[in-house]
Length: 228
Image 1 (cartoon, rainbow, N blue to C red):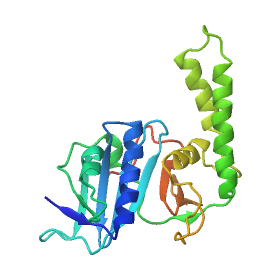
Image 2 (cartoon, helix red, strand yellow):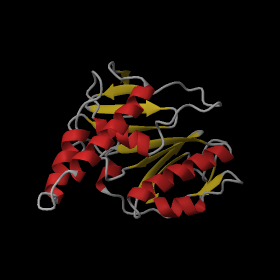
Image 3 (tube, helix red, strand yellow):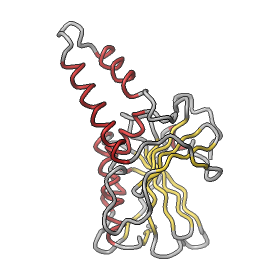
């Protein structure tokens, strides 16, 4: 079994927290792992938000497994979580699973450029809080006859599809970042800066020191991109 040696216990704890949040939204969640050199990228897709979530994890040493110098596999998020050893700073890679469609369509590796119009972190968190409050208020005001799944979805789409600041980023992407723990205030040992909005082709990416969320400007629905 392949064992990943993470940089330290904190990296292991952060990976475990990310996997736990994904599993909160989908108990059968899968994640795609890509490791090269001293970096591991973990991709997941919480279904409630229609975005790709990306958590980068530092490895203690360059990834090696016999003659293989890279790792690219889709596995069960639950099995990977069970293998994380925070004390040892390791994680065992589970057996590969048949990946969901999104796992074959990832954002580009390069070509990202900064996009203007993203509000400050405190404003982003306030925006999400206001949107959640609005959704709750509007849905609670519905009569029993009008409280249908279609009406709840309609209200949700209206609120979460609004754009943030002067950007093309939908509110649901910020909500996803907040819910996955990517938008929390910087801790005393976090020095990578504030959230930034990036674009590459049709993709947008909200990157924070704790992880990223990515989506196509027109949504991921058709998955009409090259597979890698």
